[in-house]
Amino acid sequence: MAETLAAMQKRNEELEQLDVLQKRQQELMARLGMIGKSPARRRRSDSVSSSNSDHGRHSKAIKITNITPFTSTMTYRARKEWLTDLSRAFRGDPKRFDHDLNKILFALDHMDKKPRNQWESHCKNLTENERDRAETTWETFEAWTNICVVDVADQTSQVAKARETAR
Image 1 (cartoon, rainbow, N blue to C red):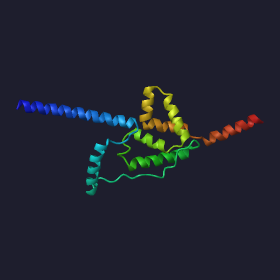
Image 2 (image 1 turned 90 degrees about the vertical axis):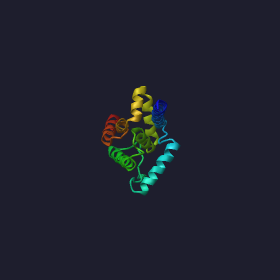
Image 3 (image 1 turned 180 degrees about the vertical axis):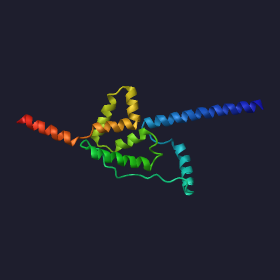
Image 4 (image 1 turned 180 degrees about the horizontal axis):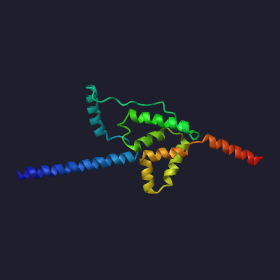
């Protein structure tokens, strides 16, 4: 009886360690941009998902494809529309976008090269802690996109000032 109890306790400890390691693996894969789970876990979850969807318990994810890219000449209004499109994509596939990192990577895929490079430069200029927070917090990323926006009113006043200076 004591041997069985000891074996069960050892097995329980092993399972707890395995759970910790699997969670750490998912975190590392997410940080490396390898969104999703390992193939072995994916197969299991796919089979569970498909059997559940056959019974109507889970609905399929909705893939949003008509997202206009974020450009370096984007206005505040266009940025708001871009964020609304991204929000629809996040709501359409909540399992895929369960972490802010996944949202940020998806948003970067819907940016032109110049703003994407600006984000990379911005992150490189941060301290390690600030960079980790910026690269994994949607609110930080969303706020940063605001500085990339072209303010048409400000641009008009700058042109007027330049014109006046030229005179």
